[in-house]
Length: 212
Picture 1 (cartoon, rainbow, N blue to C red):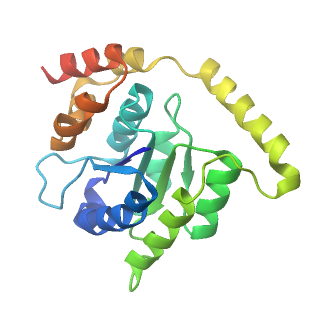
Picture 2 (cartoon, rainbow, N blue to C red):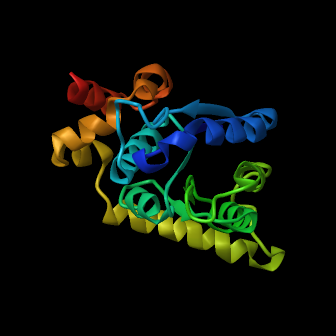
C-alpha cells in the first residue's frame, strides 16, 4: 500500500517527526511511505488544511496513494476538508483505539490527526501506537465479530451514496479557485512522487495543466 503524509502550515515543524514515526511502523509491514510536505515551518510551499484536503483527494482519486495521513492542530479542519471530496473517507483519530476501530469498522482511506492538541511529551510514541493499529491488519475486517457483515454492508452503502453526492475529481479541480488548487499541488512532493505513482491519466493531465 502507498501511504502519503501531508502536513499543513500550523504543524509543519513536526513533519520530520511524524514522517519518521510513520515510516518506522509502516515500512516493516510492507507499505511504502511518501512525504508530500510541508517539509518544515520554512517550506515556501505553504498548505492550509483546505489544501490538504485537495491534495489528499487528488492522490486518492488518481491512485497515486492508497491511504493518506494528514491532520492539523486539532485534526478537525483537515478531516472536514478531506471528507468534502469524492472517494475520500477520512476519520478523526485521537488514539490507537480510534485507529483500530476506524480501519476495521469504517475501512476508510484517510485519517486526520491532532498534531497540537494533547501532543506533548511522548507524542512520537503516541503516533507510533496509532500507526501500528492503523496498518497492522487489512481494513474492513470488522469489530466485534458479530457486527462484521452489517458493517461491511454499510461501508458499501456509504461508498454508493458518495458516488451520487459527489462529482468527479477533474470537474472539481476545474471549478475550484485556480490559485487555491495550484498552491495545493505545487509542493516538491507532488513533483517527486505524484506523476510516477498516478494511475489516472485524466487527473494527471489536469494537474499538469494547473501547474503549467
